[in-house]
Every structure is written in C-alpha cells, then in structure tokens.
Length: 499
Image (cartoon, rainbow, N blue to C red):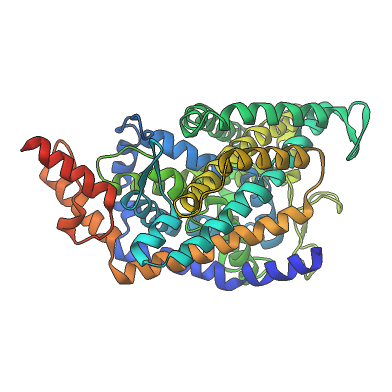
C-alpha cells in the first residue's frame, strides 16, 4: 500500500505541479501589476480595519484562521528538508515562490469573497463555491470538495497530531508504558492525546467564531515568539549573518547540490508551506466581514509573506547561522556534513540542534512547545476547511448529523495520530493536498480567462480608493460579474434602504 501511495504521489507532486504554482504566481503578478508590492501598505492597514459581525469574522480573524493552516510543522521540518536536500540556495527559491504566490493568494481569496454565501447564519465560501458559480461546473466543484474533506478532515489531522505527541515525549520523556487495545503506548502520549482531543472538541464544537477567537490570540503569539527567538539567535551570531545571506544568494544559482535540486526543493517546500494556490486560504477569506472582496484578497496575500518571509526565514537563519545542517541529496553522498550521519533531514532535528547549540537543553523544549502550537492551530484550520466543504455538499445532498460525524471522525484521527506513527497517512494526505492544488489552480486560471472577476474587483477597489470614499461598495452586476448572489442582495438591500 505504501508503495502504491508513493507512486501516486510521484505523479501528483511532480515538477509539473511545482512549475504550475510558480507560473500561475508569475502570471497573476504581471496581470495585477504586482499588487503584492503596490498595495503592501494597504494590506497592513486592512488587517485591522474590519470588524466581526453576526455572520462573519474580522479580516484579522480570517488572517489568523488561514495562518493557522499555513503556519504548521512544515515551517520547522519543511525548511530543514529544503536545506538538507537542496542546499542553502533552496531558501532563496522559497522566497521567490512566496513573493509570486502572494498574487495567487490575492486571486483565490478574492474569488472566495465574491462568491461566498450565507449558510445557517454564517458566511461560507471557497474553491468549491467559486468553481460552481464562476465556471458553471458543479461536478468539478464536487471533486474538489470531496478531495478536501478526505485530506483535511480525515488524513492530515492525524499526521499533525503525531508531531504533537512526539514533541511532548521529547520534552517530558515517555514515562511508564501502558497496554491498550491498540498496543503499548507511553503515558506521556496517552495524556497528550486525551488533552489535545478534549481541547480540540471544545473549540470545534463552538463553531467558526470560537476557532477565530482562539487563533487570533494564539497564532500571533506563536509566530512572534518563534521569530523573536530566531532574532536572538541571529544577534548572538551577528558576525556570521553576511556570510549566510551571501551563501543563500550564491547557492541559489550555482548551489553545491545543483540548480535543479535547489529550485525543486525550495519551490516545493515553499508552496507546501505557504499554500498559495492550494485552495485552503479562500475558505477563511470568505468568512470575513468586509466592505469589498478585494480587501480580504489583499489581507490573505499578506499572510503568505508572514508564513514564508518571516516564519520560514526564521527557521532557515537559525539553522544556517549555527551550521546545524547537512546537505545530502537523495541521489548522492553528503555534500555538507556538520551533524551526525543519522540526523533525519525531513524532521525538526536541524532546528532543535540549532537552538540547542546556543541556549542548551531548553532549546529542545522550546521547539517542542512551538511544534505543539503550530500543529494544534493547523488542526483547527483543517477542521474548518473540511466543515466548509461538507456544508457545500449539504446544499445538494443531505446527510443526517454530517458535521457531528465529521467532528467525531476528526477527533478519532487526532487521537490515533497522537499515539501512533502516520507514515501512510502522510502519503495519503499529500495526495489529497496535491489534488486540491491541481484542481484549484487550473480552476482559477479557467475562471480568469472566462470572466476576469478578480482583476475587475481590483480595478473597482483601486478606483474607489483613489476617489477617497469613506465606505467601499461592491456592485457585481454593474461590473459584469455574474452569480455573486451575496453581493447582489447586499446592494439591493442597501438601495431599498436609501430609497
């Protein structure tokens, strides 16, 4: 089974997907006239400009929910793998894919806002919704929704929770062994599993608002603390910083591991980390209460910067500045060996050893705590994404207690994943996420060529911004955008009130 899954993954996550992500980012960057640079100050301003309502969450809360999915264990282990397999130059290509991917994030998140709906008193939206409404292909939307439910609702949660269990065991030891019906497990992992599932249940049974309120506190704290620790490490080794930056830039084009390896691993891990184009961000973006769809698109573009340019860069600088890494391409011998041969590259080991070399044993505990928060908030994002796609399917096909079933299934997956390894689940989850990326990027490109709704929305927003309006409006009919039912109803209600 593992061999079959690995073979499928080699097709799904081929170089074609990597270059599709890069190409789409470049394409949308050019067409939006590099909106990720032109409106950078506007992005920051918009972060705190909207407020939550009875049906929607604020822009900052939506950013926190989407970041909780973007900022995960990949920011710790993924960066290490990029360096370990592609050399220091891979970091440069992670920056490139973040820069270009910000425009893709704008496009997909603006689409999420334009075609959102009100479902049981709250906003819902995402690729399944805009594929159906903008493309007119319901079957295509259903494939995306089902792939997403399987990936984020059943497979990936167990993988994330497994890192929480390992982190707890690393920080506190295994403790006594306990015999259970599913095998012998450590008391530490058992207690951790019960704690995580209980906390997760309290939050997800509280709905999207409780998820938003939790993540808006935890995600900024988590990211700021992690980046602050990286800054401390850099300052303690400040004399080595120029050499590290020079090494990243020089190895990006003539790296020790070969240009192909640096580009391939840098882009793959960058895309996997910031998720631009994968279709995850639009779910949270659609839940936001804003005056104009382009506003949340801009906020979500900024989230890509936070994930890769801040958090991933923090990990990279900690690893490189302390020399806590090896470079070992899969098809060759060690090109750089600063650590023992048995150090696992695709793991948090580089980051743990980097911190340990500067602040001692507490560095290992710090990484364990960071992993807990990174993985737990990712679990919340996974649940919300899966719930949104269940809600999409529910519009056509009713299943009794469907959300309760999803919540219980996810909690079982999390419990099992915490106490057991999940190698097969990683592979299956990668297939699901890869399919999401293929379906979403192809979808947003087709939608662009059909109607260009996101460019129309951007022009409309910039015109109103230049005119200095106090309150933005969005009239899809006037702009020639079809099937944006939510915004049409809002304009109609506003017109009747004024009349």
